[in-house]
Length: 63
Image (cartoon, rainbow, N blue to C red; front, top):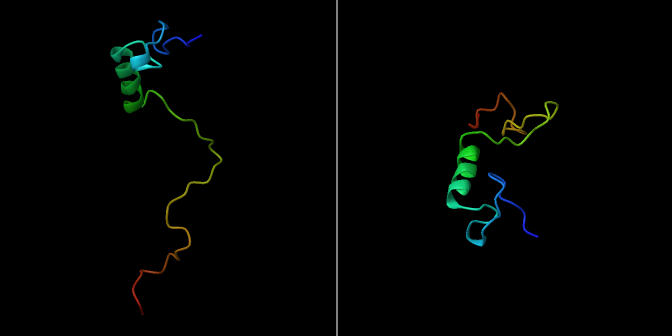
């Protein structure tokens, strides 16, 4: 048994699977691009600032 379209609940169509139409696929894409969908994160996870292992006083130039 196929799952229904996650946007409107109609039966999905192979061409636009898992959606039923291009319109529902576009609605879903718009939700992702506009921030309607968010992947949750925990507040207690450390933030990786990208410069781990580089001393703060090192300007990258030789003395």
